[in-house]
Amino acid sequence: MNDKCPGPTVLSPRRPKLGQHFLRDPHICQRIVNALAVRPAELLVEIGPGHGVMTRLLAHRCHKLAAIEIDPALARNLRSEFREDARVEILEQDVLHTSFTDLCERYQARDCYVFGNLPYYITSPILHHVLEAWKSVRHVTVMVQQEVAERLVASPGSRAYGYLSVFVQCFTRPQILFGIPPGAFSPPPKVRSALVDLPVSPRYPDEAPFTAFLKFAQLAFAHKRKSLLNNLLSSFSRSEAEAALEALALGPRIRAEQLSLDQLREVFQRLCL
Image (tube, rainbow, N blue to C red; front, side, top):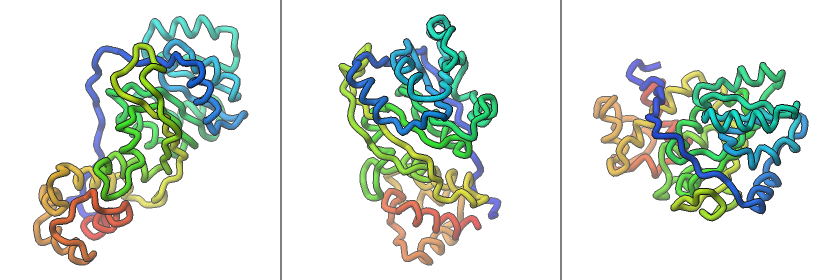
């Protein structure tokens, strides 16, 4: 591989005070549970159970439920409530420091289903962490801000299409299932949310430079107002970048958001392999 190709990125988000909008609408909760493609015998991992509103419903849908809660007080209350339920285990830990591979080994499961109501401020890092463990994760369904949901499913050429779209679509086939109004949460957020389904199906699972490609995609989308060529110049010479684009019949003014995932991959292969 070309040694000028970008390497992997380590995500270290700054955490504000713990805070989340907890689901409270029983109709929405049941609608969410009904939408999950959970298999009865599989391991279900819930991210951020909070007060356990969804946990109570989810426990009846799976063989084993591991609920990851970072807030000590919430985790303590949940452990007390579910102490006699053999199906549920409350894990007081940070999901970003949780190994899904280790979780599957712990519960003797080949893979798991991940569900969560993701805090807005850390949605992207959590999605990165979960999907990078794709060999141990069969399916993901999450509640996110509506604007983020639209980015996950965005197509090339749309304003919402960007690096997060490329990353998620490399691993999954995302679909917005339905919107969730602010009033379904306590406290109500200022924006709408959506339930997004992410069945895991990596597009390039056998390619050794997969991580490098994702880093390359970050470079390509680094400055959305700039052309792809100008973004590439931070890591490649002008002659190299222009030659790669010309070979693929891509004009010098084309922007990364105009390229399909396969086209972006072709540019990466020209420059890095």
